Image (cartoon, rainbow, N blue to C red; front, top):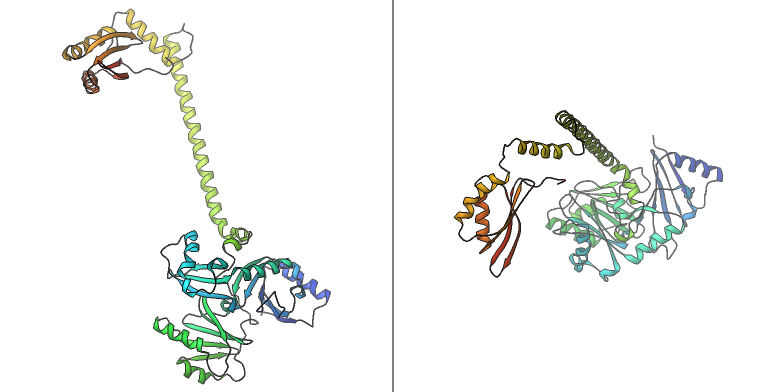
Length: 438
């Protein structure tokens, strides 16, 4: 069963109690939640605090943050700000790019804003219906909250309007009376604050209901938390034409965990520790990525080792064949040496191949004779290749000659072609392509 203790200013715990609280908080992942008063920190006011986690609820109120027992042990701080300091609204934009959303929001909400857009901070959340819930706060106000919290060594993980600290139920609005205001939560990330009237509903609440009915998203009931003296449920239900439920519980002191629907700490106000907070959620993806990279590396290493072994085996086999065929030769490049030695042996035996000079000339001569526009300027034969220096009227004629030679089963390579006053001076290389190392 959850334990609940109340610590208030004027009844501060002893040093021994503070130490026990610090040990208790250090053993569990608890969240210190702060409910800031209006006009804070410029003016002092009652700061409500509560500790959530481990099934326990500790709460109280102080005038200064350093009066909270065990404040130095707090590592996870969640701040709820006065609802009247933040406008909660919606926008519809054709983009989901974060950078473009930040640029477009001031223009999309221009008619709802009070003040210059460059003096306002826009935080948002993309909802399931693809609408964008937006929270608009003055930059100076948000900067003052963050700075004052830092003075006490507190780095908040989230700052959210207190309207969104109220419980939320589907198709139900939740209302709470706080000092001279009424806070109303109308959705996951929507709500407003208005002046308090206990006897009859405030006009802003009536107007909000009329707009919700016109947009066909009106609530089916209204839940009022801890209504004050003088509150008459039937009067409110009749005035709003809506079922009203009154509950004695207080949204702040009752044990329930509320996740901030919109964190104001976005953009330039985003805490540097936000990445560390996301690390647990990103850890599974990181592990999977590491496994994928390790597997890919292992496969590449295995493939390299396999190809290397295959290459070594083929080279040993080739070297053995060369040594067996030419036992007196000094081995340097077995493939190239064997090709040359076989060519020499073939020449000595009187046998010819298609890449010898005479067979090449015999194959290319009919093409030269058939092309009346070709002029043979010279030729060279080396390493089983015949090089012809020719002059042709244009590039089209050279391409025709090349294709005609290829059609006779001879490999042809154009190694040069220059345009001159008399036509095209080109060089054609016939025979087997050059080998590496020649």
